[in-house]
Structures are given as structure tokens and as C-alpha cells.
Length: 318
Image (tube, rainbow, N blue to C red; front, side, top):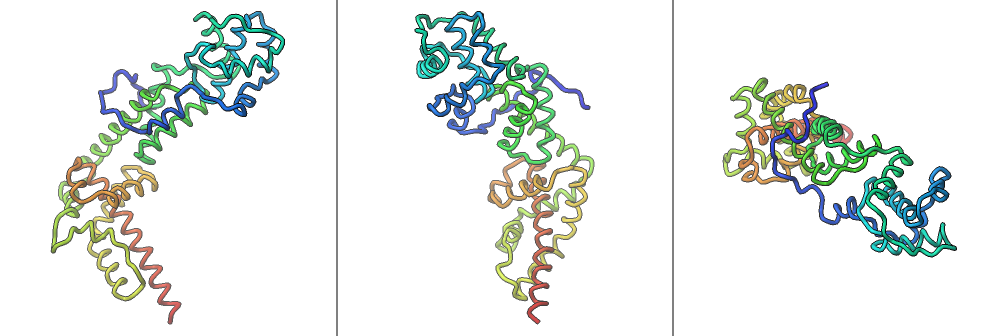
């Protein structure tokens, strides 16, 4: 297993805007519960019901139950005072302490901390550690980059990894930094493999797809799929395949070294479909070359599929 570096030692990278403000609130804002959610989240299992007969004060018990409910929903802890969550307090009081009047709302920091530890013991979770867990998540993120470099995909997979290991959810900025660092590491990995396995002439062959020839860009023409199965369309696909077969074979060879998944190849290819030639020409040449390499591989695969479908269609028409 490769050496895992602490997150603090990573180079500073531009922070990605992975989620929308609404999505961030859904994950990290203190829960604003409906009555149906309160009924579900504040339901105490048999082991959890021991808190009701503990030696804690009434406010401490209510705080513990509310923290447990919030944790079940978002796997993290929130800073709050009981008077700030009065509707949740009222529900817990009526449900478990109906004959008691809550005269005191204040709870010490130590009591809140002890309640958090009780929640962790009860749920089997552990607190997220920057020194221990962040490097492991970074290693996971770097492997995910070979499946897809879509930041949202990586972010969601990291959340799933955290949940599966029963670790409290780290802050959004921490996951942003891990995702950014993994994407930078993936760019460096690709550049290293290109340097070792791709000649300058081969690289130029892919970049030439962005050149302007006979009033068209080659990559723009290749984006166009055949509209029908007529002989003209068949001849056009054959011509394209013969013209770009050498790049397809290079791409096929390189992708074995790059170890990028089929979904990853399709994602990179889709970026070429999405961006204009002008935009593609303004990115890092290694990145552009990778996108074009995946595009050619993906498009030539489609050419072969199209030709097979066309021939089957005409064969059945005879």
C-alpha cells in the first residue's frame, strides 16, 4: 500500500465548488424536523432507553436524545442549546417525560461532550480524524479518479465510504480539499504515463484534431453521428475509421497503461462532446490529449458498432 500523507502536507489547490448551497445545507445544516421525522428519529431502541433511567438531569437526557436523533439523520454533531430547538424539546418531553416540567434549559459543555460520547458508543461510530482518516480517504479518492474525475461522483463515493466505516461526517471543506488533491494527483499520474508511453509525434496526432482544415475542425466532424443507414453514411463511417484507426490503436494501447475504467473513458469523451474547440485548445495539453484520446477510442468503438448495425440492417433488407 502506498504511503499515506497527512492532509496538511498536500499542496494548496483551488477549492472546488462541488455542491450547490442547497445541497450543502441538506448535508450539513442542523436538522429542521417535521413531526413525522421526530416520531421516527426520536424513537429509542431498547439499549437507547437506558438513558431515561440514568442519573443525568432532565435537560441532559433531553439533550442526549435530541443529539442521537440528529446524528441518526446526518451522522454528525451540531452545536445548539435546548431553547434553540424548542419544538424538538417539546416532542421529547411529551413523549418520554409527560409528567415533568422542564425548569432548566442550560447544559454544561462537559455534559454535551459526554452526550456525544454516549451517541458514539450507542451507534458504534467514531469521530473523524484528520490525521488518521483523511489520508485514507485521499487514497480512496485517487483510486476513484480512475473510474471518473467527476467531482460530484468522488464526493458522493467518499460519503458512502465514511458511512460504511461508521465515521462521523467530516466538514464540507475537508472533502473539498481531498477531492481537489486527488484530481491534481490524477493529472500528474496521467502526465507521467504520457511522458513514458506517448511520443511527441503521437501526442501531436491527437492535438491535430483541433486544427482547422477545409473549413472544418476534425473533432467537430467526428462528433456527428450518422443519421441513417444509407450507403453514403456507411462510406463516411468507413472513411473516418480508416483515417483515425492509427490514433485508435494508440489510444487502445495507452488506456491499458492509464487503467481508466470504461465509465471514465466515456466521461472524458463526453467532455470533448460538451466543450467547443476553442475551449479545448485553452486547457492543459496533457489534459486535452487525454480527453481527445478517450474521445477517439470511444468514437471508433461507435464507428465499429455503427458499421455492424448498418450491415445487419442491409443484410436483412435483401
